[in-house]
Length: 262
Image (cartoon, rainbow, N blue to C red):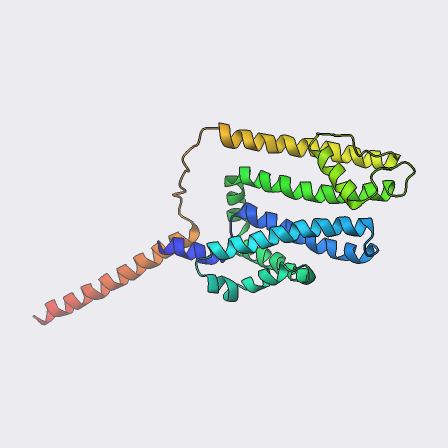
């Protein structure tokens, strides 16, 4: 029990390894968008596309903060001692620079846990990790390909993908392989970007479909408990054994002294 409590304490507010890597990716993507919002002309279509993606990321960070504070063992401890207030501040679009703290905290705790332990958790949570990866790659590709489409199509004669909304709608419809045909690229560069979206989209949704099939159709197996003691537990057992041996030797010495005096 003491060892289990120590393990929880080592994790701090760290959730599952796959979830933390997902939020780490979201934070990196959000920080990468900061210079784009400065580079692109204000209220241009490219600026609006990055702004819409940032709005979606902000919603994810709000949900993350609610999840962390509602599942924390001590809400005040998470908010103050573990600096959860920085998570709250980072939810504000104007203060998204605080999302750097999320990166630093996740990296620090993962390093504290150690590589073997983290990789073991990733293997155990492979299904959820695939789902998080699909969401992260989907958002990233939607933004990157959307910006490429606007770059090639926005001012092209006869183009119908001319706004941020058009690019995001076309990208999502293309990725899901629905293909309504209401928006389509007319330039060579736009079509090459479309090939990227089609290829990645088919792979992502095939992976997502496989995840759903595995989750709902595969028989549930009981979780195997890891009974292999780790190094810290072995050291603790050895320390207790040495302490007990020392106490027994001291007691034996006292009895010998009493026996000799009698």
